Length: 84
Image 1 (cartoon, rainbow, N blue to C red):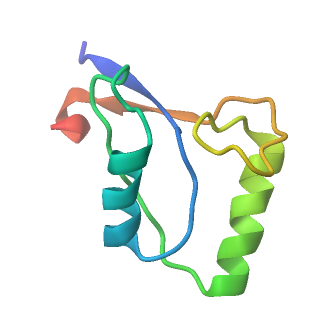
Image 2 (image 1 turned 180 degrees about the horizontal axis):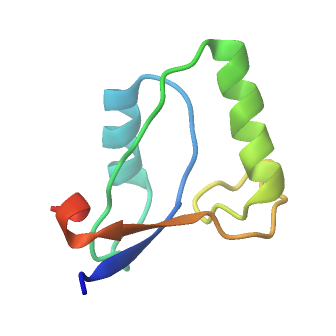
């Protein structure tokens, strides 16, 4: 049996990907997390705003403070191979 890892979504945002990652590591405290992975999808601006707010309405994303009214946890399981 392969090990699996639970990955929780910590933040959802839009904007320039490289600037966003750098800025969040400077401003947000990820020290309690063992590893932080980033995933992204590229969408047009209007769709990005809609998807971001939809996810925040459904899921409680810990590092999002504004518009975060959701209560469910957004997570995915990954195998060791996928994490490596």
